[in-house]
Length: 213
Image 1: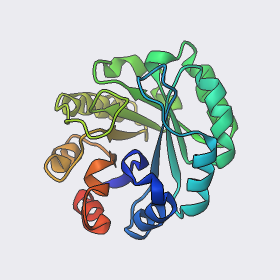
Image 2 (image 1 turned 180 degrees about the vertical axis):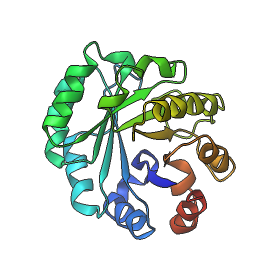
Image 3 (image 1 turned 45 degrees about the vertical axis):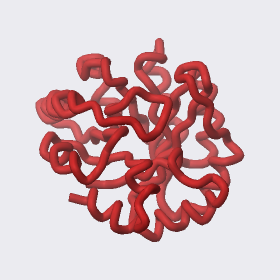
Image 4 (image 1 turned 45 degrees about the horizontal axis):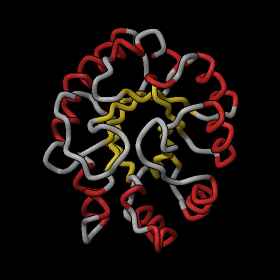
């Protein structure tokens, strides 16, 4: 299991130090939640902060867009050369076009599904995606309780991926901890996003290690 700590739960008063600490604690990605205050009722970080994160990090960036006008934000953040940019299927009218735009930047495209959105919504997009991110909380805020129905969704999605002989990865975001990590592993999840679980732990290394099952 690969681990992507979400900086939404980090101490922004010492963000540079926090980024270096989770990199040294052997995380695999730095997960960055970009919210515009419209698609979700919260407003988070912009390009100035992402640039600082990119400079401090020795790990690849995983940028999760929770925004309206996805294309505009892809252009804004592509210059930081993240490994993944993910966008919500619920907000995008032309997903194929946006997937290609992300690929044209040399970045791996991913689609996000909210808790109520079925895996079938990406059935005809899977072969063009490097990853699908399943939300196990309602997007917008950190520290929420894990929605267990994501386990069935991951299982269904993994079956779709395998039946089509694809290499698309599955990522899960929200309420992930050492209590549900084995269940996530069993249904085929490849990467987990963990914010409050990692950053509230006195040892980032122990927290990240406990998720690498």
